[in-house]
Image 1 (tube, rainbow, N blue to C red):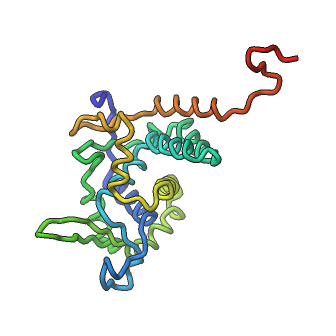
Image 2: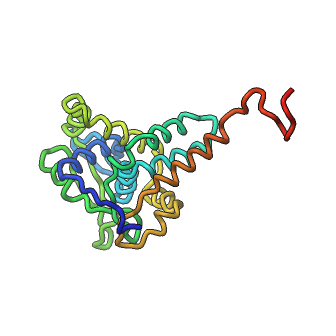
Length: 236
């Protein structure tokens, strides 16, 4: 239940670092047909707030990320590394220690990003714009600046404890790269606990369910032991 969830809040600095590393991992090269003429210091762009929110959710909920890895494994059982990654997450304390809960809003997991992103904008690492249509915001765009990429690529060397964030943001993006925000939203709603969370409540963890699913998949993947009786017959 949501009331039983211990709500941990990240500091503004933690949020800013996580968002910088996530945007650096998710950014694609700008396109003149979509972005127009941009100054040379712009090195990447992430389009749509929804996409950024959904990627951030999987960084903040390691158990849901492990669940997604298992879903991908079921689609491609010839890639056992996906199952290994899920087990690495679930066999550690990561689901508890790294979880920063998000509220469920009308369109799924959501948290205002303005404070964290303002830190990056103020320091000349990021630029934000909005696409307007009929005087309504139809898309947010986040432009990574050259200084932002430099900081993102060097921050772990300066603070090795941040290596986890670099690793996890990279994993999340590689898992679903190429999917838009709406596709990610639909994908996250496939998990019942996520979809059933009341609007305005914190999304509850699924660590126990994920570990049970991992055990079931490992049992299916495990080869039969030599000498194990087959079809009820004693081994000779």
